[in-house]
Image (cartoon, rainbow, N blue to C red):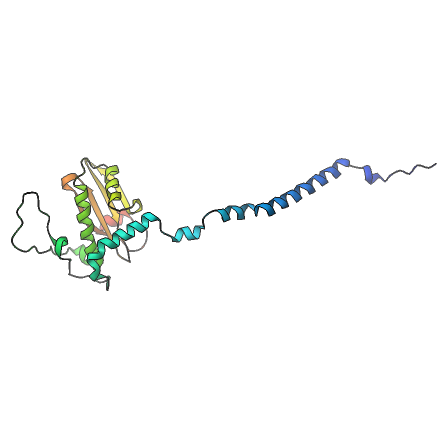
Length: 223
């Protein structure tokens, strides 16, 4: 009786056959996993916030800062019709009044606002008027700070509504602290240069380009 031998291919290289079967199983498992998870990249992007939406929506701090700027500029509402041109007009009332030291007798003659400086004439009406508001409230707040370190000054400015991204050049200068505030809005160029030094605190208007990032060097040139 003649024995029938199976073909050589049936038993040749058994490991190769097992390896091929294993690879096929893994491929099927991987495809099934992708269908279940929705794909690695798509699953991650779908679960997080849309970066385009986040970039266009202001944070709560930015919204509060913008609201504060609008509130301070309300006294300057007469400038909104044409905020681009320089003017010789200045706000009247409490803004134009000089502060008096405790016990000092107010003058009997009407107070005339000081003539605008050359730098102020380069600002639009809204910026010129708003600068007075900012300077007054910042000086009053910082005059009461003893040993005004950068940390203390930042805390006071934050309390007034000025957010960190608008505070620049904050540094110790002897016993005082210097800083700059970027107050640009609606195409304006307004900034403020401050020196926190207790009762000798001073804040003065400065000007920077309307567009682009804030540069302390540019602010120092226009003071």
